[in-house]
Length: 142
Image 1 (cartoon, helix red, strand yellow):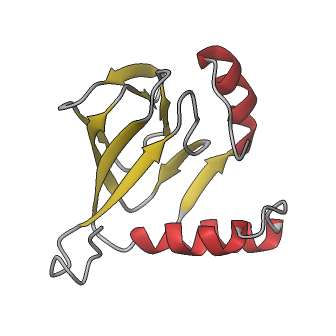
Image 2: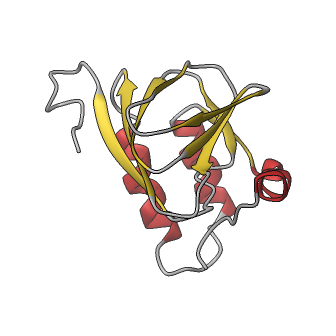
């Protein structure tokens, strides 16, 4: 929605629509960015370290850099959140990730590794099965 250039280098803002019971990203942590998630629709579950938070419209959830976290749609209707990222720059990750995932084939592990390294992002892909089972979620395309 807004990149760092549009905000004079202050922050970026992205929108995350989530289908019912969909897991967003695997458990992950950022080295450089703080994220502020504002729920605009539905129920959004967030794992912050060992804590689970359920956000509803109007709730703001803070995800500080260095903390393991993930989010998902915790309900049976669509959910949506606005995410402010500070400092900006990480919004480009989503565009690059879309290119890697284009076509529906499994992502190239080398390209994914390079992307994660470039953005100093750690991702725990092994967290997906437990998160899906514990919260009744699905991950990836149907």
